[in-house]
Length: 275
Image 1 (cartoon, rainbow, N blue to C red):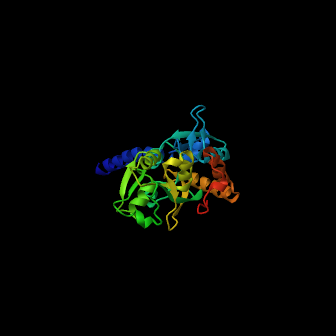
Image 2 (tube, rainbow, N blue to C red):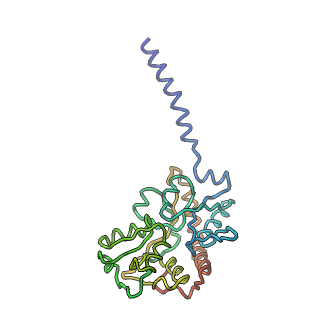
Image 3 (tube, rainbow, N blue to C red):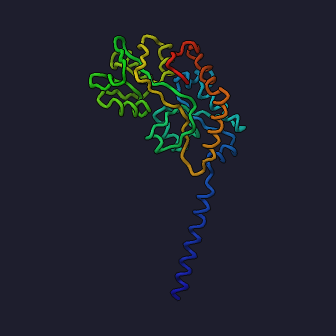
């Protein structure tokens, strides 16, 4: 009788476990969902030309991130669906399955603990928008309590500057636009931004400050973030798409074409900025 009861218990446990195991194995991957629905959900940050900006009249998303998203979707016989977010929420939105891909992220080690990253889209340069009279020649000059640095909270700027200039005084604000306003109002000495965004801000409103490129030159790759999942087919496909288009020069061309949104010509790009 004991043997029969043990056998019955084992069979009952197996009957419960099998459906659960089948349910886990049958979980749809990102790539499978995209192929089924023909929709790629792309993270979009408004008001960040030439990266991403939404036309208020038409609702159309423009910039090189929407260009990347549409081109990637086209390669999959799909449509791009843009989901508005912020740079600070990018990782959370990927983890929560709100978006399938978030272009324009720096692959910091902290972020890499939470999400996967693709191959680089292009290289970018960290710069400053500085108030009049403030022109540090090195990053080390910022590492002082008397220096007020404005930046968007939770971004790669926040992570990098917290490590490289821990003694500085930080104004951690909600958006990059808020940080620019802090510099313009004299509440901060500088704002940390990658070169493409800094050029855009200063082209739109030169009164915000001046562009400063401290030494040594600090470059970082700009990649796309993906939700971490066991099936790497989606990541492999995006890497293939990036490598193919970088080889053809199309990744750079989409960036250069988007600079026209903020009135920047290729000749306006400082020689230090290479992507």
